[in-house]
Image 1 (cartoon, rainbow, N blue to C red):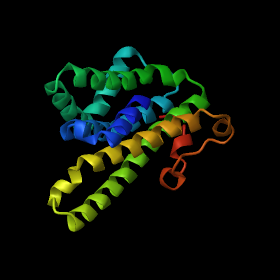
Image 2 (tube, helix red, strand yellow; image 1 turned 90 degrees about the horizontal axis):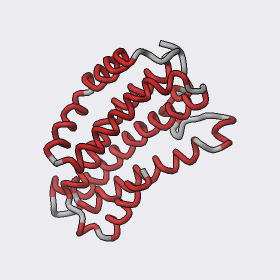
Image 3 (spheres, rainbow, N blue to C red; image 1 turned 60 degrees about the horizontal axis):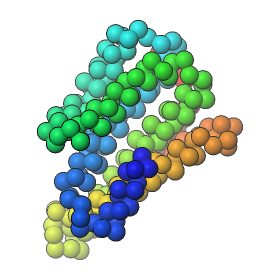
Image 4 (tube, one colour; image 1 turned 120 degrees about the horizontal axis):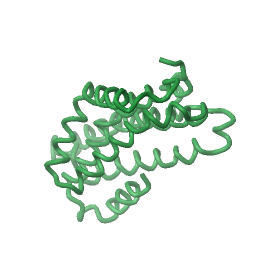
Length: 200
């Protein structure tokens, strides 16, 4: 995640050297997986015991299959070559692997993982709303029309803000204050879901 922050920070200074399709693909890929990853972590943290490997695979693949955007992004990533496909596929495998590791984790660790993944989803939705608003403003005051939504500088700002907030949240969630009183970064959005560990 810190690498992503560094890439977008670099782009904010040297934006002309970064191609727009690369930025768009990175943001779309992350956005397409937010709901699927939240679903995987929700299930993994609410399981009472580690499921057999074959059942975990069925659960993981089933959740991803119900999130069609993920399957579509796998195809797009594959078409872009190994340097895009391998990291993206590895992130999916890592999330599915948590169906084995999280059921036996401590309640605090489960709450931390839930908070991180759900906060990432909430921040993503909020950033998307701000991106749409900023794009509309640029459409009306600029001369690029609908292309303003994919202005390289705007994409860099969107990515930088998203990854910077996510990185800061990792630091917050692993701090002692959070351990004493776990809470979402956006409690009005979360409504207690992050600390909800009711078994399935």
